[in-house]
Structures are given as structure tokens and as C-alpha cells.
Amino acid sequence: MTRYFFIKKFSPLFFLFVLFFLLWRSLFYAHTHELPSALIGEPLPHFQLKTLYAPHSFLTPTVFHGQVSLLNVWATWCQACSQEQEMLMKISQDYHIPIYGIDYKDNADAAKKWLQDYGNPYISIGSDPSGDTAIDLGVYGTPETFIISPHGKIIYRHVGVIDQHTWDHVLYPLIQQYRDTQ
Amino acid sequence: MKLFTALFFISVACITVYALPTDPYPFSSEKETKRFVTLTQEIRCVVCQNQNISSSNAPLATDLREKVYRMIVEKKSDAEIKTYLVKRYGEFILFEPPFNSLTLLLWLFPFIGLLAALFFVYRFAIARHTPSLL
View 1 (cartoon, rainbow over the protein chains, first blue to last red):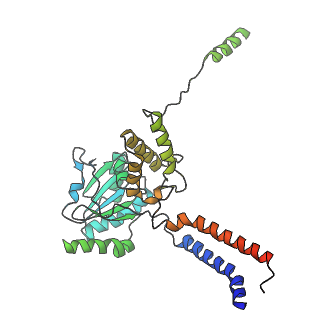
View 2 (view 1 turned 45 degrees about the vertical axis):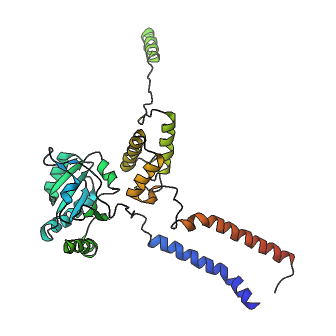
């Protein structure tokens, strides 16, 4: 009888505890702003973007074949992108990783000026004024960076600014793996 | 002077301004219009997460509406449009989550809750009608 009484008395407390635990977890540990991409492991979707500096040539997924590279989606109106630029310069100069850019919903003149101010780490930049290619890539917030394998497949997608910490612990180790297998 | 004033008001009254609503998403059939309205209400704006793309003014929502519009015009089915978006933005983009192993508990919980509630009501009723167990 006493055991039954014990369960009856403490079960509400137990339920409350479980509830609090779940709420606490979703409050502090849920990554609601990180959306999974189902494109990981898949080849890049087809695109053909006019390049910023040579409007008669195009940036297409074929440029990514042969070496592991980065595809960075940015815009001049994106505050965080200007913060990230320094790190991207470092990646191209010190780590010698080829970086390609997609200029998302932007004005070509503004973009050129912006690159003069903040630096241009890109081998080639495709302009995506309509944002169509960005939708095809599942971009929802700039800057976004994709790691592309030597076979032109998407290995990883990073949303937000790349800082030294994420570069050292997440992106660079992944890139090295693909460099070794090359 | 009075005549001028009168003329002025009469001429003002004669000017009628027509503000015809121009449909930004013209469809060839009523059915397609309905599909567009339903679909855009079922798709989440991933930037402003608690709004659908039909009611959101975010630039990405506008682009996604445009994309859905073009896919409907290209005679893509609702399922094809949803698959396209889920592939890129994850299942989160749909307000109604699909029924799978991940969402099993989510879908079944209301029924479990209802059964539990019935069970407790039953227990409570029994306890009231029988002498105390203690």
C-alpha cells in the first residue's frame, strides 16, 4: 500500500521534471536556425551564371571538378559577409583553397566596389540577381558556404560567418580528408 | 467666384480613379490559382519561421512564391513542388510534417494523451465509487 501511495504522490513531480527537462533542452540546445540540407552528397544543381568581371563567360558547376573547393554565397547588403571576408582572404592565401563566389541578389557595380573595399578571395564570381540559383542550392541566409568535392558533389554546407574556430574544427578537417583521398 | 467653386467641385467629382487590382500571379485556370493559394500557405518562410510564404514580406518568401508560381505554370504536381523544396530546405519548410519514424511520436502523442486522460478519468471515477483503498 505504501508503495502505491509513493508512486501516486510523486508521479506528478516526476512528470513536471520531465517537462522541465524537455523545455530547458529546447530552449538552450535546439538549433532551430540550422536547417538540414538534403543536398549533401549530391552533385551541385545545374546553374549558369554570368561572371561579375567578364559578363560573356559563365560560372557553371563544371569549374569545381578536379579539386576540393569552396562555394561562398554572399551579397554587398549582407552585414555578416563583410565580417567574413577577412577569413575568406586568409583561406585563399594561407590555406590555398580555391574559393568561388555567388553574388546573391546584388548590383554588379556595388559588388565590384565592395570587393575593392573588403578584398576579393574568389577565383570567379557568378552573379545571381534573381536569387534563382540560390533557391536551387537551398540558400536561406547569407553568407553560406558549401564545400564541393573534386567530383563536384556537395560535401558540407555552412550557414553564417566562417570564423577561425569553425574553420579549424569543422571545415578544414573535412577539406583535408578530401585532399588526402585525391 | 461661386460659379468657379461650383465648377471646380463638379470637375473634381467627375474624375474617377480606377485602381484595378493587377494579379501578380496570373494562372490559366481557377484550379491552379487555388493550388497556388493552398501551397503558399503550407510552405514556411524559413527566414521568419512562424509565417508562411503567402503572408510574409521577406525577400526569400517572395522568391519562393515566384518559384512555386513558375513550377505550377510548368505543370509540376504539388508533390513534385514539395519534394523540390524539402530537398533544399529540409522537412521544416512544410508546416505539416510528414508521417515517418522521426515524427511518429509527434503525430501519435495526442492520441496517447487522450488515452491517458481517459484512463485517469476512469480511475478517478472508480476511486470515488469504491471505498478508499487506503
